[in-house]
Image: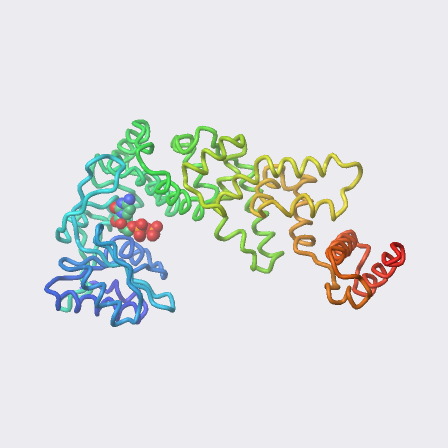
Amino acid sequence: MSRLLDGLDAEKRHWLHRCGQMAVTRGGRAFLVGGSVRDLLLSNDQVDLDVVIEGDGMGVAQDLARELGGSLIRHHAFQTAVVTTANGFRVDVATARREEYKRPGQLPQIVPGDLENDLARRDFTINTMAISLSESDFGAFIDPHDGRSDLETGCIRAMHPRSFADDPTRVLRALRFSVRYSYKIEDKSEEWMNEAITGGCLGTVSGERVCKELRLLFTESPMQGPSRLEVEGVLPIVHPGLRFQRKPLQGLQDLIEWWEVASSGVSLVTKPKGWLMVLGCCAKRLSSTERWDLVRHLKLSREERRPLIDSGAPWKRAADSLLDSPGQPLNSMVEREFRGIDQGALLVGASIAGIDSAKAEMVRIYLDELHGVTAELDGLELRELGVPQGPIVGEILERLRVSKLDGKAPNASVERKLVKAWLAENQL
Ligand code: CTP
């Protein structure tokens, strides 16, 4: 009996044990499968729980959600379900199945099957291992395709010649695992993968699915990810103008690190948007029209598209106009030009300009010192100082803000003096 499950914390082990019992109650069997087993073997302590049920997977998911007091989302068409609790505990449950690909690149049709079918339909041998969750052999290790040996020798091996053509997102997955673990793609599999790439298989997949994989790859491996995509000829398939940009991407990592320290880790920019900033660097040469084509192809949301769109023409316009201004641009000018531009796009622009450039320095000053600056006084205090009601209040607040940005109003008392002087000047 394998002791692999001992690598999990007690809570996870308990619920896996319960899954096993629930499956038996419904006349089936439960197994921990796929990436979960791979990660357990790699001693990863952040193992996701992927459970496959021979039998009524949707029923077991329902029982589990009830007992856990968690929420349940079921996709009956795919026979998959996700159970989550309020404190973030999550189990993915699926009915064991065979998959039939009617057309390459399209989502497969699902036919209920047993564990053997379910493991055989998977992408790479390292993802085809299972652990029994049944009471009688709880923890037993199941490895029909020698996944463990490929995991130990560092080899990504596809299950069959059509694997990449059936599901071309596996090209991106193979490269992601290869980069993540520094594993080699086995020779024959690489041949199948290259045939699929040159045969244009990625063109048969929806932009959304490509996007999901790019997000994972660029988040995990912001340098090696795009570099590997270029080497394998995949980057130009996503868009012909995309290129791996070594220097900007190196600069981007430095700037992201700097920004995380400068913003004390509270930056909302870098974590979720990091991969979009990587894409923004690779899109260095893309025109506005091409950027919009890419946005539409990948189905990026309004917020997601900003690092890509704003690092094009809006960034160039803003940065060039600041450099064109005679002398050193005032802080208030920098703030005015940059405030409408996505912060991720500013970091992309600075990386492309070079992190030692004047443009990058302006971005650092803006993010660190200028963005979000407001006057010390508020509308109420202005009224108390005698400012009449109406648009003048907003105008004076803006003048105070500009003075503060440019170092002419270091505190509230100077702001009060300024307000009084302006009121006197204008005989208000
Ligand atoms: N899978 C597959 N083909 C795909 C996607 C997934 O065969 N295109 C299978 C693999 O067996 C994989 C499992 O479904 O292990 C779960 O997929 P997923 O959760 O997306 O990936 P993981 O392998 O768990 O990898 P990660 O560590 O990135 O979560």
